[in-house]
Length: 470
Ligand SMILES: [Zn+2]
Image 1: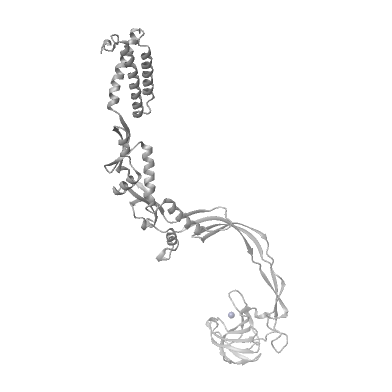
Image 2: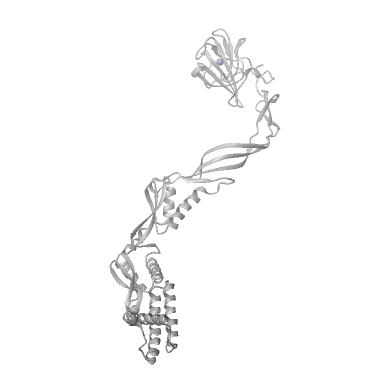
């Protein structure tokens, strides 16, 4: 283009006065349109404004003689304005976004923000109609694209996407799914929930139930022994009726359902301090002046107290292991002292409360110990054995290592036993008197020589016979 093409020299002044305002108005339209197309392009806006100012200025000063370079600028601006004017007439319309679901264009939205809001309310509506479950939109089925709609804005309004339209299309085009969360124990599904919170809450309620109140603890680290996972997966819309009831899942985890064994084992470890009593000891003092079997408390026992700190492990609330790590006696226990009478004053004809001798004479061989329940009195084979006191023969026969044995009950909890006998001169059920012969010395049972194994029992307990013999 040569500069001559843009020279307005030959124009009349009146033509110039009309030309510049037209250019100014046109440039204004171009500016509006450009801003809509490129809302962020500030430079374009600046250029447009400059063009406006120059145009308006030139309209007022067209009559004045202008320098040659200014005239050239004015000429270029004028040519540009004319071109834009033509474009503006051609491109009048709206820049919007088209919404396409599964290849089917359903209409327009003005911008992405409007689309986002519309989609949110559509999801909320579908969710509400499906048990308030979480929804997942299949994004790959939806396309949002910038679109220019020629003509006036009514054309956009006619095809604006409505909420109901979007809801119906999403459902009919299978573009929406339900999000569910499965609770799995050792890889096996035990529950299905509509939200992550519900799955987590159910698991937490199990923890709370089995953790419970564990008293004074300074530490508590819990963990399930099983591999437990919550996984999300999508399902077709409308499958909400197969979701689990949280309480039922909780019961199953704790009680195990048909197996009656818990499916989960929640292990906690804690350090616990408790106060515990210390039992007192009882010491007995034999009193030969008190009737045998009588007991008299000389000093009452008082339990002590101690604080104990332990590491305690629980599984589902039951203690499975504990280890004492420290203890402190805060109160010492007081021993109980009891006097125990040994006088057999209610027995015997000698009046001294003692038992009569079972043999005329003997050689003492072995006394009472932890391993031996009587005194071994050695005497020649066949020597007569006498009842130490009057009583009833309750047994005369073989009795394990005792061999042939006679047991006499004297009443009031007192018994005398005579083991290793060679023969009996009494029988079970006989009433015998003190000093009456009941058997002869032998070596039956576990015996290495001829002897009498002589026992005295008070209330079932073995005592030292010599303490009771006259
Ligand atoms: Zn013995």
